[in-house]
Length: 83
Image (tube, rainbow, N blue to C red):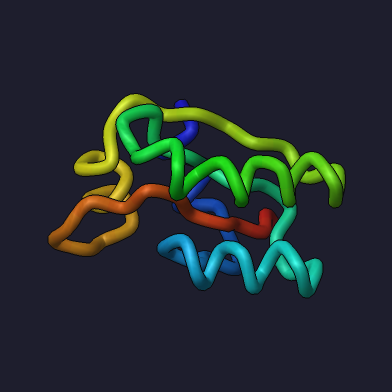
């Protein structure tokens, strides 16, 4: 499952602003997006990932994504760089 990839990541950027910045700077190799996140928020990041040829992986829940990242709130998306 994609949540396991979070534990393998050498870089973890949680949230929309941090993920966008990391994609633009080429810091991440994958982006994980929660399916229940607002499409108005995720659309820009998804298009940016397509432009930069960065794979987008979908997970079901913002709550579970946030929990897997070690935060108490939901996360719409996370940018990761695998080692």
